[in-house]
Every structure is written in C-alpha cells, then in structure tokens.
Image (tube, helix red, strand yellow):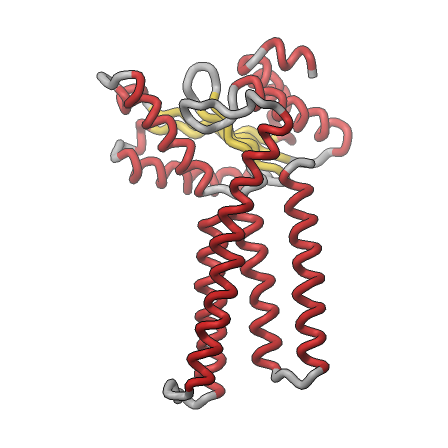
Length: 264
C-alpha cells in the first residue's frame, strides 16, 4: 500500500465512524451544536491525514475555535458555566488527539511505506528520498500519466552552493536536512520529496496542474528564504507539468538514476 491509498482508506473509515457517531448522538437527543462538534472532527482528521502534524494542528485549533464560538453564542457569553468549560476541554483534547497525534502518526506512516517498498528509499543525510527511489517514482508517474492521463507536476528546487560554502560534511548535511524538512512541511503528505545526485531536490505533486505547482513553488521558495536567511535569487524553482513537459520529466528521472530508470 502507498500513502495515497492509506489516505483514502483512513479518511473513508474515519468519515464513516464520525458520521455514524453523530447519527447515534442525534438519535439519542444530542443538540445540533454537539452534532456540529463531531462533524468538525472530520475536518481535523482530513487536515492530519492530508498535511501531517502541521495541518492537523492548524485544523484542530480552527475546529476548537469554531466550536467555542458556537457554544459561546449559545450560552450568551456565560463562561462561568462549568458544563461549557468541561465541553471545551473535552473537545479540545479530542481535536488535539486526532490533529496532532494523528498528524504525527500519518507522517511516520509515510516514511514506513517508503522503507517497506525499498529499504534504501531514504537518504540518511537529508531524510529525503534517494535519487534511485525518486527516479522510480518519476518513471511510475510518467507511465501512469501516459496510460490514464492522470495529471501531475514536478518541482526542481536548487539552492545556491554558497549557502553551504566553507562548511564541513556534517554541517552541509544538516543544511540539506533542514531544506528537506521545510519542503515537506509546506506540502501535502501525498507529495514526494527526493534529492538528486547533484544536490537539488525534486518534488512530485500528484493531481496538480501548472498553476497549483507554481503556487506551491512560490510558497516553498519563501519558506526556504526565511529558514536559510538567503536571498531569493539564491533559490531556483523549476516547474514541470505532465501535460507540457513529460519528456523533460522522463529525462530528469534518467539523470537521477539511469539504472533504475531503465529497469522501470
């Protein structure tokens, strides 16, 4: 199983469970506010499964704020009601469990799926995928597009070598790891981040057209600029889409790892 299938399965099962619980609560006389509170949990689950820890945490905070606002309006601003405070604490803990703990668990599952597929999938220096593994993913994406026309985009992110100029191997590896972490945090969990042999990073964005890829690239560039404290000109983001650049994507996979590309 890959992460995309795991995502669909988790959201499907979670949605069924949450809707079922909400239906039961409604049948036993629970008020509409508590029904909304349970449905908000579905949004938190989606954030955690789709975006990992960061997305889950943001969704949890947003859900709790929405619930608190609804309850406060219903209680006419009376915060002294112990039942209100108890319900806020209960739902806050529930949202945090699903959003934060669930998001972290989903992030770890992504890595486990990759290692289960190939024990050498992860580059220890950067924690991104190895050139061999990302080359395989690129070739598989190309083959899927050619067969089913499922669109996808690729970003090639390069950081000027001056960012690690004068550093030792350990320090340079630390910078590469920081870049990989920042890239993953700004992406969905279904997106793939790998490192190319010459040090650049390649990102595979499933079901993403050019406009979406360019928006993601601009966001990632800004994140890296702030994280590494370097000029914008030191970061190059190249956008490739299956619809327009399928041959270039195939060539990129070949450059990443000729042997793997030939074998796929």
